[in-house]
Length: 220
Ligand SMILES: CC(C)(COP(=O)(O)OP(=O)(O)OC[C@H]1O[C@@H](n2cnc3c(N)ncnc32)[C@H](O)[C@@H]1OP(=O)(O)O)[C@@H](O)C(=O)NCCC(=O)NCCS
Ligand SMILES: [Zn+2]
Figure (tube, rainbow, N blue to C red):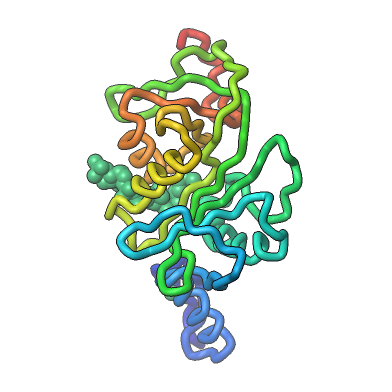
């Protein structure tokens, strides 16, 4: 009997079984090359990074087009399943959901999902490079754009695509990078990224108390 193998793309499958091979080939292709993104008359390019356009999906665009772009978020969510999603169907004007997609050869290879939020804690970095809440009682009622999810296809990582994407999107929204909020919890790679763009600390949001257990640790 054929054995189950786990590929670097994350999929477990049984080589030699045709249906498994087909599913794996599809999955692997997206993992390497990204999610197909249609060219559209509605598309709005906000800039480009090394020849790769950055597209904006916002609520003023037709929902059918937003839903097509949101397929990139479906791919990205395989690597950050606990983060807020984006399916293009948001209609809550206050949250003003947006997605920014890095497109390479007709494929979505990077993504930032943003929404407006108004509850934040201030975080500093500790000596081990880990985020540390500055004051668990500090709760700012200021609206900010929050990076809810950020993702770059595996092949393009550690080449400063995420950094440049954050910087381009912040400029486009007329925000300083330090004014953005970041949804918690951070992944390890997310932590490296946030530390590189916010070296002095950052605004965190999300369920920090249950994530970090600060209510049990009042000395912070
Ligand atoms: C997080 C993520 C978007 C970073 O993308 P990226 O394009 O590789 O990031 P960058 O190349 O811009 O790196 C930014 C900085 O972080 C560092 N860094 C990024 N990933 C790192 C890692 N895994 N280990 C060590 N350092 C890392 C880079 O070296 C760079 O620092 P530098 O300026 O000092 O060189 C990407 O790793 C990813 O998609 N991860 C899976 C999804 C995820 O965890 N998202 C975050 C939570 S939503
Ligand atoms: Zn694979």
